[in-house]
Structures are given as structure tokens and as C-alpha cells.
Image 1 (cartoon, one colour):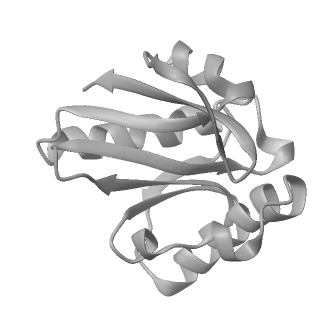
Image 2: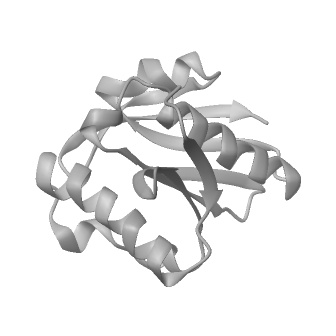
Length: 145
């Protein structure tokens, strides 16, 4: 993992703006997802986590509570220079730990197909077939917490 990396819950408007900036760099700029698709109503009620290195936010993810008692993890994004250094795994672990502490029993996420092996390495199993979400192939993955 990268040195000087701190994973924390978003606590301020500044933290949230930095998290959204990472999402826009990854999803809107790199993957051409329309900006209006990137932000949604779940952002207001989700628990957001950020990865901070030397004062800069370099990654983010969010957790949304579902009515069925599951944690829906999504909007996982890490700036390109920080990928494959353990940042995404640390964010994922942080969100899973938070979900467990809230009494949630399992986690569900929609993984872009090209990164499903990342989630599989963290204990997630694919459920169902590939589907399109914002014109990108995804798979649903689940994990017992």
C-alpha cells in the first residue's frame, strides 16, 4: 500500500467536493460517462469514504443502505497514478467494516467487468450475467459480511 495513505469517512463539504472530483476524473473524463449520470440522489444519504495522501484525495467510494439489510458499495474510483497500489482495497475494506458495524449482513456491488477480478480477490462472487450500466459492461457481485 502507498505510504502516508489515510482512509476516512467524508466529514465536510470540502471532503465531499474532493470525492466528487475524483469520481469525475475517473468516470466522466476517463470513461466518458455523462456528468448527469455520475451524480445521483443516493449521494445525499450515502456514507462516503476517501483515501487521502499528503493532503490530496486520491480515491473514493460510497456505501448505500438497502431496505433488505445489504450494503450497496459503489462509485469506487482511484486516480490513475494510485491504481494497483492497494488504495481501492483499503477503501473497500473501510466501507465493509463500516457496514458491519451498522449491522448490515452482506454487500452488493455492480463491478465494471474489467475489474471484477479485483472484487473477486476481496471475496466477492459474481451473481447473474453481464449487463450494461451507463453503456459499460457490469456484473453484480456479492459478499457476506
